[in-house]
Amino acid sequence: MTSSNPPISGDTRLFAIIGDPIAQAKSPALFNRLFAELGANAVLVPLQVPAAQLPVAIAGLKALANLDGIVVTVPHKVAILEHLDLLGVHVQAVGAANCMRRLADGRWQGEMYDGAGFVAGLQAQDIQCVDQRVFLTGCGGAGKAVAHALAGAGIAAIRLVDSDPSRQHELARQLRAIHPRLQVSEGGHADTEHDLAINATPCGMAAGDPLPFAIDGLRPDAIVADLIMKPERTPLLLAAESRGHRIHLGRHLLENQAALVTRFFGLQETPVTASTPHPGENP
Amino acid sequence: MTSSNPPISGDTRLFAIIGDPIAQAKSPALFNRLFAELGANAVLVPLQVPAAQLPVAIAGLKALANLDGIVVTVPHKVAILEHLDLLGVHVQAVGAANCMRRLADGRWQGEMYDGAGFVAGLQAQDIQCVDQRVFLTGCGGAGKAVAHALAGAGIAAIRLVDSDPSRQHELARQLRAIHPRLQVSEGGHADTEHDLAINATPCGMAAGDPLPFAIDGLRPDAIVADLIMKPERTPLLLAAESRGHRIHLGRHLLENQAALVTRFFGLQETPVTASTPHPGENP
Image (cartoon, rainbow over all chains, first blue to last red; front, side):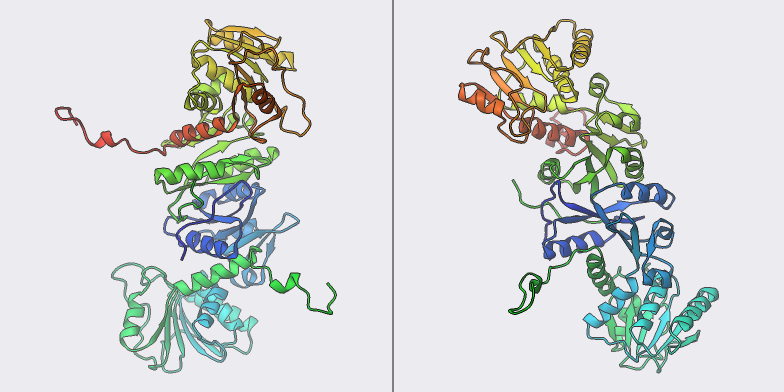
């Protein structure tokens, strides 16, 4: 990890993350490290945008000709849809966006990489999704994004649990409609059928929170994942670790999502081969 | 000069410079160096705001709760006045602002430090203003700011020249009204009466520009100054240097203005004495 950012000059391209609160956000450090690694003359800054100010703030940000993209976080991930001209496939499935970019024609396109970031985070830790059986609690924005991405990555089955039955039913209905071969069940507990058990509720962020779900029914080889980033090791993960389960931290989602969003923003290493055609190839 | 900025985190306070174009702006590098020297967790970013977009951009920037101040440059220095709640004394004199800050009560206060920056730049080079006789060509925004600041710093006389007689008359009228003891004259040439001759026109920015005024009437000990920053040595300054005059570069204004604006933004070193009262003093 570098301890500094490249100098900002007049021609530095601008990116932002909008949220409220924003002081706790890890994205500025994360994205600026990625930008520096790519050698991009670009910077991402945190912007605290109260919910009621979203329309005027977004109109203003769109008016900045050197601002190329925005990362969107709580509480704006659903409300931002009204300000997008084009919705990426993941936005359409999840009904929320976590980033937007300015296209060459001036329109703004939104995308949702929270779920893809979680799946990429699993893969970066050599955890495969194909044919896995998943227990997921929390069917809000984060849970929806993760469920759709896991379904797209080829899991065999998912059991959904939410304290709000209508959210649970709605996600189950969506998943069945889009992924007819996925086995979707509702309610119940994490048990011996599950290879991966995931917490997508906020339960575990506050001191004294109970466990979001019981883990004593899981097989010893089941993996326990939490989307919560702070604390890094939630009570759920500590309990799972003490029972010998492999655990998967929330920060893997953020780190891998940031890499995907950076690419979405058009910032990526130019393939070396692009400027050095093979002998005999047309340039 | 440091080659990097401190890392940007979620709680970094945000400042911006708005202008169009903005890619050439030296202020981001300059301000971020000053912020780093002060140990401030703050960053200034360049924002390209087309003139027609100023109202919507400013409304959006005001909606960002962690943005504390804005540097204003061409073409917005006059138009920005409509978006200010309080006008600093220099703004009222010049009719333009080069910076604005958010007050504790949410109102925005504008100030104009271009002239004060020029005077501070002279002083930093040990060039005193008191009782000096000045020749100034260019009575637009920059010239106005410099003329008012020089008058406030105690010069004895100023001769104003502008290709637009109404601008020249208007500035002469203003100066006479505010500084009744200042000797103000109009038209004519830089000659042996002048201690300091200043170019505040854009003439010298483009290759092949003629000199903005003839220097062959000046005394050898007269100082020739140019507000133009690029090229650093304009044809005027090169000609003056070759005739043996001391010259004063445009960047001194920018550097000293940036220090003044940084202080206006509330970023400054805490005086050591503030927390260590002298023995016998009440705390």
